[in-house]
Length: 310
Image 1 (cartoon, helix red, strand yellow):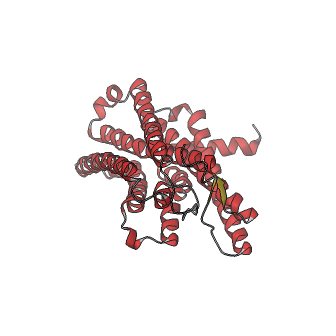
Image 2 (spheres, rainbow, N blue to C red):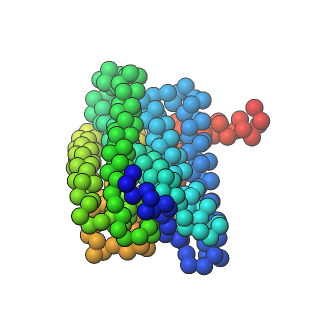
Image 3 (cartoon, rainbow, N blue to C red):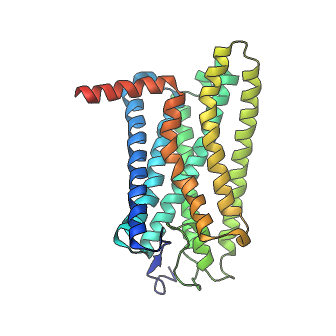
């Protein structure tokens, strides 16, 4: 790459100005990271070990859990390492790898959330066709498409972003390597190609968002026609967790990538990044395990076996 000789490393945004506060942030994010690993690990184990959970809905949840683990493991460990040792440095290659993995996992997760909306739509609005529309082969193909979309987007954006000449130093105003922050360092005349790529991705993302909204409009219309209160509760218990995470994910990502530069600040950017890169992997296990009775029972059985030493 043409600019690797001029920039050999980047300086990430520190969580605090003093080393004592850095250590406090390290302890806080270590706790968050361990909670995410534990919660998502339990869900992975429960779905893998219990045949009752080998259904399309839980297959997609398993993929979401893997993406969440990858996403939080891409950003937090390096930030915690820097906070612990009171440094800000990340190598050029490390920054490129981090950006690639982050885009890959975030785009794949968004595509998977779209697929999960379709799964809920078919389950509630077309239950008689659920087995034919969401068979094991169809589920595998849809999951592969989500992962593949993430990979292609990551290749496109990483190649475009790191082919740009950098004219504004190497200080990144974020605790991990993020496309908008790298573009701020590039020469003003050079980043049009990546801006166009981002606009294209945003339009695709907006299409997915419209699909999710339309799916949930149809779902809620169908739910309101269910005569029994038990049917209402079951439908909402499977849909509301997904809708909550989609709303958090979409609003924070769109704000991060589409906000005006005039309202941008390092502290605001950091809060938004935490909301869409750290919070979902931590909350997903809690939300899904609390709202889904089958998963809750499987988790209790799994933990009982662990305590009994089986």
